[in-house]
Amino acid sequence: MSDTPPDRLSVNPKSPHFDEATLMRGIGIRFKGVQRRDVEEYSISEGWIKVQIGKKMDRKGNPLTITLKGPVEAWFEAPAPGEGETEAAEGAKPEGE
Image (cartoon, rainbow, N blue to C red):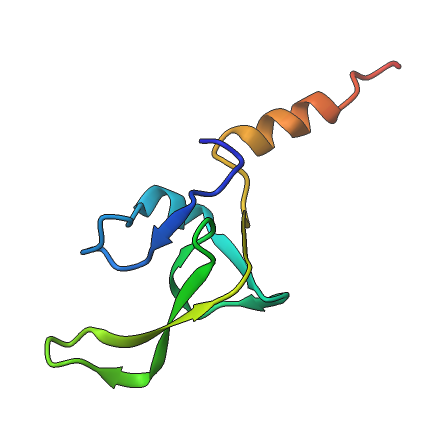
């Protein structure tokens, strides 16, 4: 995996933008300079996020969401599998130096 999060990602398994492997790494979202933990879906290039409106549900049982527009930043909260181990090994000095 790369170090750049996808341009668009959703937490809904029914969405075509759902990616479980990416979500398992953890995605941090900053919207208008404030870190958000309630984001259902985001698009960096289009500049929007979708957040749930309280505990309201539609008639099919899906959460009602609202789209908020503004600058979106995304980052991975954990390194890709294997990346953290190699960096730790490269930083370690052999004994005797």
